[in-house]
Length: 468
Ligand code: BG6
Image (cartoon, rainbow, N blue to C red):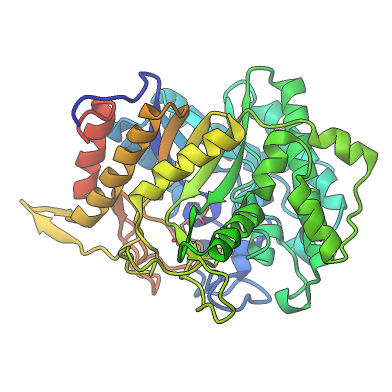
């Protein structure tokens, strides 16, 4: 198919998170976050305090190099850049009464740079980087007091940046809480001792905090657009057996309940049944119910892969991503075992549109792969044809979904500049159009180099998708 079906105001860009790019973990008055004690991501134990093997402490040094990096994004033609604000830069411990001015000033400078290049900011308020103190002193989101700390933090951000930031996301991949309680929910209680009661209460607190931030945003920034952000994983039945289809329905329910509440403002019946059957009685106040009614303007999501489900009792272990699920025998996998399924993106865009009827924003998608730096015509680069093919195939499916009638606001590919992986804490799992010279052992100059995909994506943006 030739020609473009992307709307003229479609937002094109890239996405990052503070803890994966900024570094400077102890500069500018920043407090520790849960990431500062997770040197192995989800693949190893946390440490009592930061250790030198934790690549996130320096990450790719965006804290000092943001101007140069944003200039490269401008060269790519970005019209939007997604980044998160490190909560512990603004409230170092999380429970202070007053924010840290130095932290606020840093994001002023980032916004100045974006403005200079005409790039729209898309800000994630909380991206897996809750202040560590809130984990240690309060057991994270299991504690109702987190709602108040988050509200104070969100209010400070809205007051400070509200005139400059239109698009906000309340929590990154809020539905990962169940699978990564410490990273996602700052829950200190070890996962094997955590009860369902605590976990679902934490979920409830996050959902109330998210809706409350939406309410505050409406008061302070009438023109802002507030989105939720969920991890999307379309799930297919392993066989046509109705029991497998039912297993898919249940997996979908577990994954989509967060979005259902954020879009519809109340808990769905299937979730109330789960609570009943597990003997869970949530502490939900009348105020909570009223707060939940403040629903989002749009739904954003990450999409990397799909999975299969089966009702079989001897179902094999998971497909290699944080949400579980089974491998799909018809699909190829990335070097990290993530199944590559471009059509799944069209499916999920349609499913979400049919389910929620809200504008959608693809705020993460990409291929984590090992890159080899080579020199072409005297210039260091990476010939990342696999990444180009992955992104091209996925964007073609976004175009198909738009042709299906789905309202898609934009697309920000994940890790537009190489960054530290969330699940494995490696730098060798690269997603970027821009190569960063730093290795898993921490060595490297931190120099930036344009990969082959840099030119490819610049052309996609320049032609508003016609070059796909
Ligand atoms: C999402 C997260 O889960 O996927 C990002 O929002 C993360 O923080 C991205 O980096 C890719 O996952 P990974 O584990 O390859 O970094």
